[in-house]
Length: 322
Image (cartoon, rainbow, N blue to C red):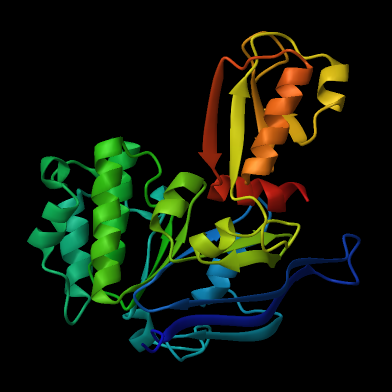
């Protein structure tokens, strides 16, 4: 099967602030960014604060002009394109971008009239479960309700590609599932979805392709499966899971130094009786046997043993701390 068409492409994109003549000098926000997104796929952009995600999205939407590089959105230069391209692109406004004094039904009807073939408003309202607050002014809505209004406004024109910035922020679990279902519907329809989120579990659940940024460049990319199958070591046989065990007693330095494997305390616990320890590298019967032999040597019978699959959060922290 052929790959879906590319909806968005950034190649060698650089963006610099400041001037060599000023006291602050030049500050390079993006340093040769490469990424792409395809129709019918969810592309998730991750990275710590200051990584350049917001700048990259603004350039992709045509709101900023890159200092260098090539940007193509639906086969056009978004910075030079006119209204015809804007009508094919959906952008989810954050809370501050919504008019506060009007109720959602007034806003959405107005936005609907701006499009040639809008999404049927009743269907969109039902999909986002908005009926109970349609006639309440936006300023009086909860944060989660405003998120759904912003999402509806970005989708009402039935865009070919949509940019969603933290679409589930502030939502309760039921509303979050509603948004996930809608994203799945858009994906099946062939809409390209560019999504940012700080919730790594959400990214792992939704993404077809993930780009992890740091300091203005992409440092890791691929499908979720590809990212979970690799580690910084680059070894093809790199472990894809961790083993956890609960120690009924405090482990001494001599205990840990005699271990045959790389052992680290699970984040958030201390070296006290009952603490959970993480073991990396237990991926074969021989390695499990070596671990059991170490327990025998230090006279320790774990209180609890479990395996934990590698997650996108593990990959994110590998990248962020390397």
